[in-house]
Length: 220
Ligand code: SF4
Image (cartoon, rainbow, N blue to C red):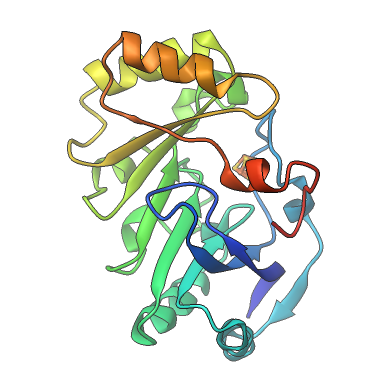
């Protein structure tokens, strides 16, 4: 059983799959409280569903790509079985996770089934999350199928992330890295200009669902 906050059809808002229609499966619960979190509704509520029931709802949506997100989806161990079954079903599976050290009961990044595209947040200081909580060992194990996302609130966050990309050996080479501005705090154009000035080999990302549906917080 998994505690599911919501399941709906959407377009992928970020990552190399940006714009691709998908079934979004949001799990309830998160051990963090990022200051700019836009998914606070995922902290509680939802319904307990069996893996079979979740698979049925996904099949009904009729889309081959599934985005598993939260909250923090790795807090619930049966999510591993869900992802494995989705892969067996021939689906493209994306997992969005916070990239932090979670309670011992959680699934480590390294236990995510082979074949899942792991999209891992690295929390910049503006998130309010201490860098000591980042799962550096898990990040080091990422490969070319995976990607790192850094959400940036301001120039100080950008400079922290720039240092990370240029000089920190804990970030594996060859992994796609995206920098995203916090909606309402940092202009995407400013971020793009800084990246160009510094000749950083990272991708500028804006949350597509914010552009397409600026007035909707849920269901997009
Ligand atoms: S990890 Fe994600 S869901 Fe959890 S508080 Fe941070 S932004 Fe919100």
